[in-house]
Image (cartoon, rainbow, N blue to C red; front, top):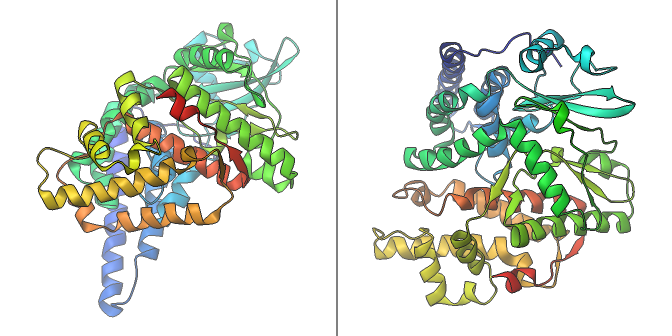
Length: 436
């Protein structure tokens, strides 16, 4: 993959790259409608693929917040057309890396020394590159370590990037301005935290210690003395990411261990710690041959306010979700149903949120849940597809639901997606019902 020799850091430079991408998207639409005049049955497949390629290329050059939003959108079932979801998911693993001279410059700016003055055998090329930073491997005092280097200008361009990516996202994905503003305000808060590498190290250590007792879950050691605002040093972990792990054809026993460990890890964080590793894409887990799992990257941690937690998880409770009066009360208190809703709107959105919440909460309402059941995930994808085309949903009067739900929903669906690939039955227990 081609390395980047520079990243635009000024507001003007970054905005001009968005404008260039917008111009290409406009050209793609012109070509599409010209062809459609000759062939009225032409679908949007080629248009979506061309737009996804052009937008992703622009975001990859800019790195940072815009590329992170693309990665997050790719994880939201049903929100994006397939072409965008497939292309944007590359930001989880294989975004174009920075060239070594730019990495050296970042090191000198951050700690006053070049990588070779701090580590032995520092790899000039990144071993992994994502949206906010990239990882290099090195040696320190005889130990193998991973060094995450944040891209230049990322932390200082969050607000301006989100401001200029909004209209492009609204045009491409038909997201209403009010919904986009609501969504972006929560995203902005988490991105600011994600660019604070000292906070990430502190959270990584805190959650690692709190969850050390969970069978099958492991964590790398962090080195605060070798880390800083834009650089993190941690223990290097050998192992495989999800697809690589599955390609080794692990036994059912090993798959079951990995599945149960991941469920227990997330269940404990949410219901006991009231904070959670809220970026569960496959690139943040390293699987071992025996089925144990290392959890890495604590840049995105969502803390759960008590009031939100109590009301939200009551909705997932097996008794209350089918209690019409209580369900209606919680929908209103959580602002899924708005005071301004007319009777037909209230009935419509009650039905929509019932379907979503019933589906999301299904694993909690049984002692054992089979994540290998393809029909469950087909229903998730089908529902997402239906709602993405629902004109009434798209024309809704304002954003709905608490901002806190954005990351919790994404966390659960991200976890469910990983568990579906592992394909095992998991002991989900009754922790939820005991905790509420």
